[in-house]
Amino acid sequence: MKVALLGPEGTFTHQAAEEYFTDLQPCFCSTIEEVFESDIEVKLVPVENSLGGGVRDTIDLLRESENNVTGEKLLPINHTVVSSEESIEDVDTVVSHPQALAQCQNFVAKYGLDTREADSTADAAEKLSSGEAALASKVTADIYDLNVLGKSVQDEDTNTTRFLILNSEVGAKPSKTSLILEPEEDRPGILHAMLSCFSGHQINLTHIQSRPTKQELGKYYFYVEAEVHGQKLEKAVKALETYGHVDKLGEYPEAEK
Image 1 (cartoon, rainbow, N blue to C red):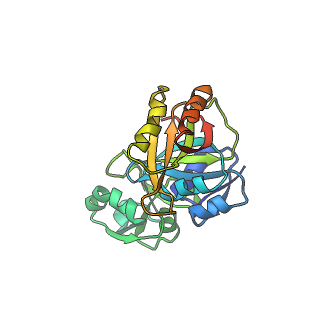
Image 2 (image 1 turned 120 degrees about the horizontal axis):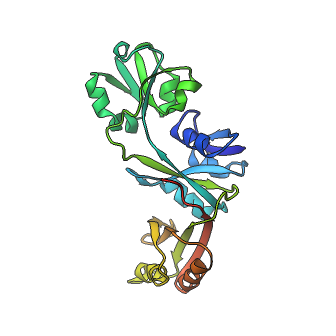
């Protein structure tokens, strides 16, 4: 299956797509905006990271485009040490994206390694020099024919990225819904009033994020994810529409944790 996703080859996004799709034919894009603009119908985009929070570009483009959310994928970010060297003792420098280097400081300190920053974890693995190792996804070892010198070397095991799948077939019974809420007027208590439409119908929200509409200062819209679908949600949406515009982005099964 052809899938548009953020590149380059060998990133954690690539790994997430490999794990989610069978017979994946990745079509790599340079930016999230390019993924949304791609002629490839099915897309995979990051929407949230447990350390960094919501991915703003994805949320804004979901509001602006006409894509349908049909699934989600959770990927624990486990940094693998890859190199053309045979042993970690032969390595004097570790290369990776600045975030990856920051997340593996204990490993770097343990071996007394120098560090060098790269544009991405995949770029680090592709352009290694003698005496260097990269912190990257596990798929880079096969892609660039490198040796694995260490697995899961991150300082903490709480780093997880969640991806949304767009425009694919819904593989199982939906249990979540993504929505955009845009209040018609800015007045005290408007967000509380809109959220009460969910609590009043006993609907739990798993994610909520405010984003500027970019129309004027102080005007925001809200991206929310609800643990519900079907008739119960439709009743809540009908109540929400008395306060503003509601755009249902899609119903899909919750990812396995």
